[in-house]
Amino acid sequence: MTSKRANQWLASADLRPTRQRVALAEVLIGDGKHRHVTAETLFEQVKLGGEKVSLATVYNTLRAFCDAGLTQEVTVDGSKSYFDTNTYDHPHFYWDDTQTLTDAPADQMKITQLPDAPEGMEIGSVDVVIRLRKKN
Image 1 (cartoon, rainbow, N blue to C red):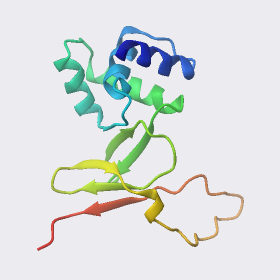
Image 2 (cartoon, one colour; image 1 turned 60 degrees about the vertical axis):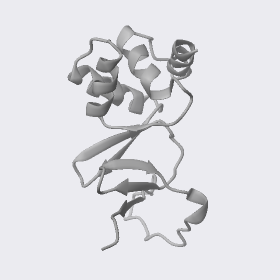
Image 3 (cartoon, rainbow, N blue to C red; image 1 turned 180 degrees about the vertical axis):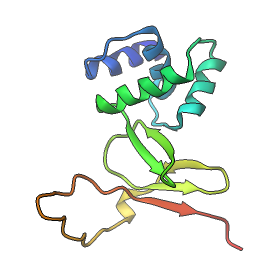
Image 4 (cartoon, rainbow, N blue to C red; image 1 turned 180 degrees about the horizontal axis):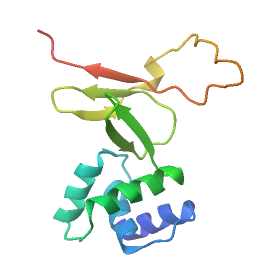
């Protein structure tokens, strides 16, 4: 079922199911649950599964998945990128102690007003990352 789900996911975006893409897709969506991964953590998970793939291929494939609308990139601290298989607009929690990203409950968040976009521009999306740390 994992491979079938991965192939269907790729086909939904008209992406050719190369060996590497299928291997990465199986890890990302094979069990039907959403994932938040970095390229490095996905690389390690695929390696543990016995697949030979380079870190550069993982980065390139994740970029292709983003371009095809299969994943979205969430940047934390301006330098660390997470790739989310849930592509609908929703907020995230970033856990400082474990450096992980999870979905935050969208139904509990209300954005009542945004600033006007500069002339000639429009707001494409709003990314909300809520940083969490343990209480002192």
